[in-house]
Length: 263
Image 1 (cartoon, helix red, strand yellow):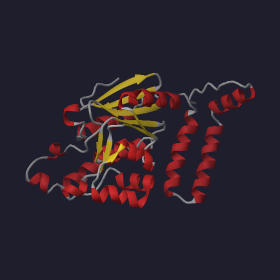
Image 2 (cartoon, rainbow, N blue to C red; image 1 turned 90 degrees about the horizontal axis):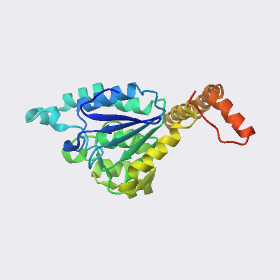
Image 3 (cartoon, rainbow, N blue to C red; image 1 turned 90 degrees about the vertical axis):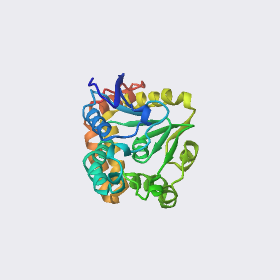
């Protein structure tokens, strides 16, 4: 697998584990990190699920502000931020949400700013008990980015999304689970084991059907009822023609566990 400067990649069975690896900067998302993560997600190395986490004591502390310059460049950085978002961070977030395989995120500490967006981008978000989610842009006169507005409003509704964005308060893992913002809050020591077990379970599933489910959920978040009906019908057509669907039918008739191959 490719060597990177800011992320670690590892195949564990059919799961591609991607680890943000700038622990000295709390895994702040530099442009290089966004580029490397995008590249790693482009070639999944045959993986049937992705697990995303952070090295050290943080998941991701947000965009790397130091990498954007200093002094007046940082104060008058609207155009610079716009270019970085349009060219690097936004394409990364779009790519994660449109991957053809399930995504599990293991949030192992602070997930702030665009790191919050990345942490919430998984189909299943697990967070260690010491983790928290933060949209602190209001404290520096900026607005949430990286898709946070879309993710938060749809996950927890207008009132709670507004609370997170306009008050800039930390939301603990337990609170996030109670709100339905994440799948589960777990003990820190169990986080990676549980996340990998879940990713492995998903990787053993019917990949064609799971990919269609991901697309259909995205359609449901923005589309009309008729658009969702059409998307479901198309997904059923694609999944129904897969080898996994045939295997699923046979295993049901033969009263055994299906052995899905992802095709």
